[in-house]
Length: 152
Image 1 (cartoon, rainbow, N blue to C red):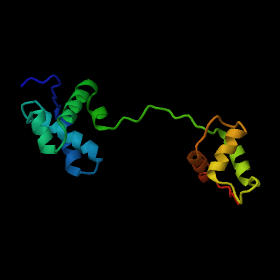
Image 2: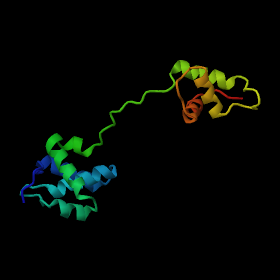
Image 3: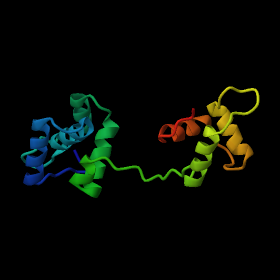
Image 4: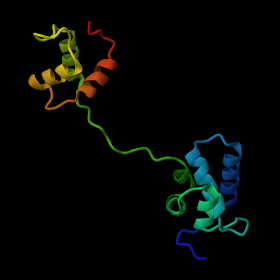
């Protein structure tokens, strides 16, 4: 059968994948991808299984087999086995100055009618003081948790 993404492993790649699978000391995703590539090898020494047969044998979706084939042909062995790190960047709600104001506020006297600062009160006060435009109480909690200051 003609495959648009035909996997042909070099002898060194095949030996590496066999060693990887045989040792079993690797992340499960990496081992599964290595098994897919070994079964999909279309050289004369490789089994050259179909996508459906590989999916049935490894108990995975056939689209996963297709994605692994496609990535191997396009990018090579190493990128196919390893996980790509996320390229998104999260902007911090509170910078250093904002964190300092939060800590100073948490150590200050609580507002009238309250025995102590709650996370929601701190979040509302930061918005009222225009330190930030919006902030969730969970962000306040995480920020206070990573500091070594005491709120009491």
